[in-house]
Image: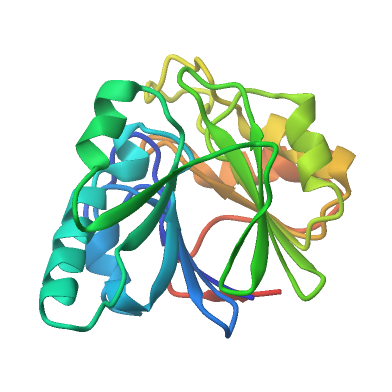
Length: 244
């Protein structure tokens, strides 16, 4: 699998950046994991809506879905002009219901996430585990030809995430809270040390901190995670192609 980080800021982006968005390419197809603010302009540098096998929204907060309506506009155009033969496959939690209702239309096939069911997209097996956030939110595990990517979504520390991430080749884990930052109240989120702790307990091979605060000391956060995780800890880089 190849993973392109399109955006990684939490809440709202820094200048020229984007919030959560991760493009996964298995060679058999492509999956977009979250579609936050600014993601669409990054996505079109690498692919187009008609090439996506599906879009997964970890939860229905705008920093993870602000650009989904724009992506759906692109789907409308692709369907009308014959580039897409089917509607956009969109996998999402079913709450908050008032936000879910805005996603329906002739452009999209809505699939409500079921944590008891494994789905297949782009030749990969996708598993979902509910995590601890302020609205229903799912961590996501993508397995392709024995390689594993795990994405935490937004969550406070929870044992379910440790189990899901166990042995992952790459772990994209939220680290929203930072000493000295006024970015968040902290509800439903972790700091970098907690992300490192989960990575260590799960024995992952590689940790990338995501969902970062725009006013945070990112190098301090990386070092904090490194103190509790014995493996490599990285800050996200949108110019790098991550391969597993």
